[in-house]
Length: 543
Image 1 (spheres, rainbow, N blue to C red):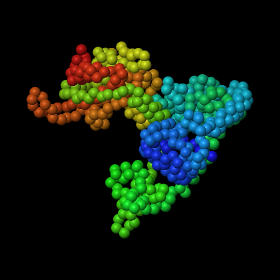
Image 2: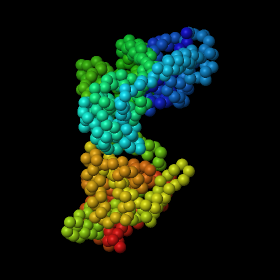
Image 3: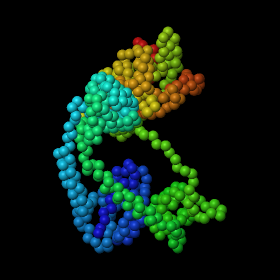
Image 4: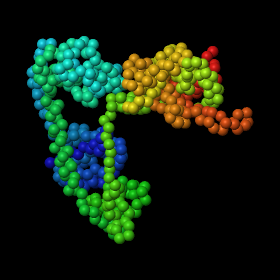
């Protein structure tokens, strides 16, 4: 019986694959373990071996073509077998497979309906199910950092139950009910989706074992789990194991890879060998009929005196540590990926003379109980420049552009788990000391995980400063929904030319990342010219 071979998932992130080369053609005999094709994934070009034997009856994707994972790649069966029925479905799967899916769907629906009829579980009188709260607008799941109450404790309305780590900060979660803490659904350090079971509160001594065990994930109420969802993965497990088992005996013992002077090697193996400068005649192939494959090249060790040619010599030991991603790290990754792949970034790089700024700051800080930083000067200068260039202080929407008349500056702050961006509201209206105090207060809260969502929302522009780490220049990813972000480097003492003479000077490099949908190149350049006037002559910010 003919077997449909679908595009395999050859990496954990692979969604589609491209056929780089077919190593079998229609009509060829295929043995279990033979290399069918070389597939280009999102990470590498890999050899795909057959787990079936028979004749290659059909090729669904030609060399250079791309298709999604699980779409039709090839069909293997008995020579001359009729495969018209398998192709009538449009090339994604066989009719038999589709029928099987339909039967499974019907069975799952029937089982789900049966479960639904008996799903409601009555809560004992006075018992309240507390679910994972949504503590920020982007929160999808939370982690219990600390429980401030333990099972058996009396809980009053307004008591702090736990500290919950969200995608933005660690926040206190207070109870809106009074009673006794009867059950804890998550231990410290464990995570759950929003609306999943967090705790159960009710009258002391109430048995809530059934409530906890029958709570339906994400429902916000006590319900039984739907069995089909749990059982579905079990059907896949045997298939995966069979493939892995079948692959092991298919690796033949290395044999000479040449025949009458001709070398047999896969295109990928040839490419890698050329890049590494490896002579293929020195490599023994472990593929079909002694063919050299990618693995042979990667494991090849040049022969030393007295050693056999192409001997596989394992060296070293692979080792690694795994750290569970925090909610903040997940949120940062998601936001930055979205920004980088949706906003067309471009960068404008400038270098400012900092002599006047250095003298200005020194004189300003001579005032008792006053201390401002260079970062405060940059934030204030940006705020004033943005009022003159509202296009840089804008936000992009599908059908419109919003030009903000207010200026809220986000200031990037490094914390152990990543990066947060607290916001200095109405920065253009604040004095330098006020900006300095606000930034210091927000940075302290950020490092202690005490920032509230309100203190991290509403920015119209962002400043990221790595100068204190000695970084001379760098570029940043735009903090959406902002249209731009300014990267600020260290002040460097170096030779500069002034009035035709080389003298010692102090300069600072800045890079403005802009979203080209809202900020054109000339607009960004004009903003930097205005910023230059303020920073190189900071006394003008006081006028």
